[in-house]
Image 1: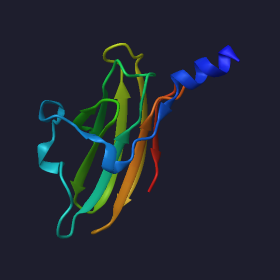
Image 2: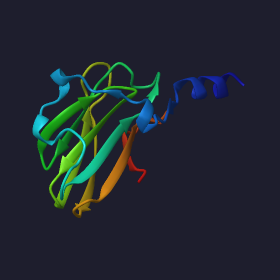
Image 3: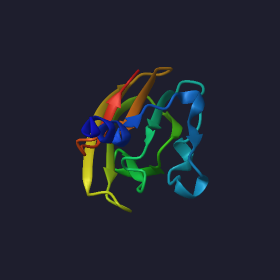
Image 4: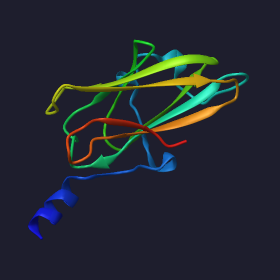
Length: 132
């Protein structure tokens, strides 16, 4: 029973887009792509889970090898991107977290949208999971 309680206590919980806190401007490194999409652009949302596990560190997200932002638990951000091919790389290692990375490829069309959940489950693996 204690193991179940400990595992539950270490799990992260999904954050809904409307409940996510915005990332402060000092952790946004590519301000030109942050914000809601408009005319002919595509929108990609990133939401980081809340919870105890991994709460002591930021995760850095790179768009086509350009550092875009650092996200902490319970935060979310919208990116406006030109149509085309994208490579998203998520890294952690700052603060109390080990050096872990994961990545996803995405092809965006004008007016399209996608959303990703960033989670660090109790097994310690970093995940970038598409949810839309």
